[in-house]
Length: 432
Figure (cartoon, helix red, strand yellow):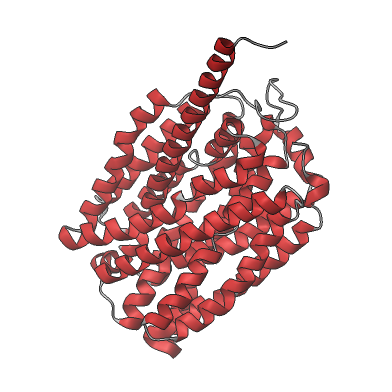
């Protein structure tokens, strides 16, 4: 039946409004993710002045930079994901945003290692509800053919937030103190929370999937049984986790590395790392997501192969970069891996959304994040810090350089796991 022009016009207008609102939601979710990473990463650039004032060891800094945050972030992620598959994801994310922002601000009042540790635990509690629900919301606002690019855009919150964490932390600490930096940066999220709650709507679950399922979300045991039968999920999760051990470890320790090895000031390091993340990290995520969407439409193995190849290319760059004195050549060898080590985000996160039905996405994402962050956040900063302490007697101020070089083996493990996932991914995908 041919519809009158007015009806077609009304449908087109409604579709445009839905598309514009979906982009608004994506933009706001990305903004929240940026604050997530500002609050998560800023401790790395401030490690120097905190260590000097509170007389901490590298191992203690490693505990603060990863383990303290990861304890509750990983432990609460799965129950929050289970809740998000049943409840209002927007409200859950609002509470999470408010929680991690308040604890970031409270970090500025810490006067001992114990209080700092507890404050970072609180940030982890809040951020446990900030990512898995967002993945599921995005999957319900956008069609499958564009999800890698859309989730890749959302993942730009990682390099942008990390860069801003370095830059704002460096400038605020230089102008005021490290305590003021924590208080002001935490305040950003507190202001955003009510706007997020009032302007973001909860979408229909699975509206753009081949077989949308509006029934109640299945119990945890059902999700576990489904994932247990899909090796691709576990291989992708472990691969991402191995890559994140170095990813998070370097985000925390590179500021200290440049200050110790090259004598750079805190402000100079914040500018350098901010530039590396913006000019390296953003193109890396965009490129990986675009390639995955284009090739993945023809061959789903691309969701695993593209990240595997990227990680193999990262290894020699860090080996050369850490051996060179700071200068143009060293910057190039740090810029390339800054891009390549984030290529995995769009492809792998998209693959996780497609390995389960719509009613399981938040929980599956939470289990994926549990593995990724338990390894990456829980071990990355701690392992490098511990190795640096153990090597200090032999290598002195260069111990951190050798600790970083030893950790690059995790990139090889990540690539091997992604290649293994590629052999299973076509069989394990849900129809879309």
